[in-house]
Length: 300
Image (tube, rainbow, N blue to C red):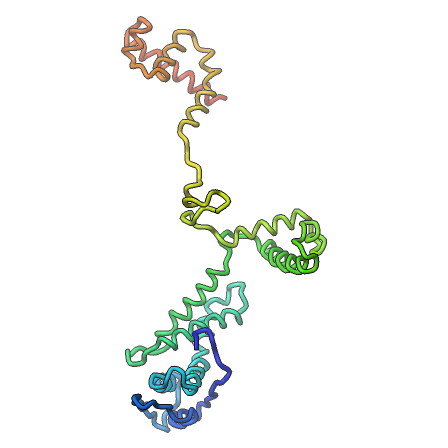
C-alpha cells in the first residue's frame, strides 16, 4: 500500500480501554514459518491509555506483520487515525493562508502516512518528534507548488480560475478554443480583463534561467543564453551623439585638441607637437574645454 493510500478500516479506540484489550481487537498476528513475533509490551490496566503508549504498541505489532497481511493494513490505518491530531496541530500553523484548512489537513495526512511507513520505534525517538518535520514539510511543499511565483492581485487570481473553467466548458461546447470576446460575454467582463486574466497565468510559475531554451527558438542552450548583455559601446554612441552639437560650437583649435585626445587617443605631448603648442598649454585647454562640455551636457 502506498503512502498516499488510506483505508476506511479504522479501529476506534476508547480511552477507557486498556492496551491489551485494544490490541486483542486487532485479531491474531499472521506469522509465517520463519517469522518470530515480538510481543508488544503490556501496559498496566490501572494506567491511563495515552496516544503515545498505544502508538508504540501498534508500531511494535506493525513491525512483525507481513507486508501484504490484512492485519498489517488494519494496524497501519489505526495508527493513521490515532495520530491525526498531530496533523491538525501542524495544519493550524498555516491557518492564515488562503487555502481551505481541509486541504491543508489532507496534505499533512500524506506526510503522516509517509512518517508511519518510515518510523522505527527501536531508535528511541518518540513518533510525534519524528513525524512533525515530515508533516510540516509536506504542507510547505504543497504551498510552494500551488503559490504564485510573482505576486498577482487577488482579483486577477480569481479571474484566471473563472477563465480556466469557462474556457474548458466553451471548448467542449464549441469544439474549439473560445475567443476573447466569447469568454468576456460568458463571464460578463471586458475583453481587456480577459486578456489580463489570461496573461497572469505566466506569473503562476517562474522558469529557471538554467532551463532549456524553447524548441521554437532553436532549442539549444539555456534561457540565460538568450538574454541580452550590456554593450558598453552603445553608451559611447549615446555620449558622442549628445556631444556633437556642443563640439560644433567649440573654437577650431579646442575642437581639434578634443578629437585628437579622445578619438585619436594621442597623448598631450603628441597633441602639442601636432598643434604647435606646449604640453602644459594643451593640458590647460583640455581642462577648460572639458568643463565647458560637461556644463553643456548637464544644462541640456
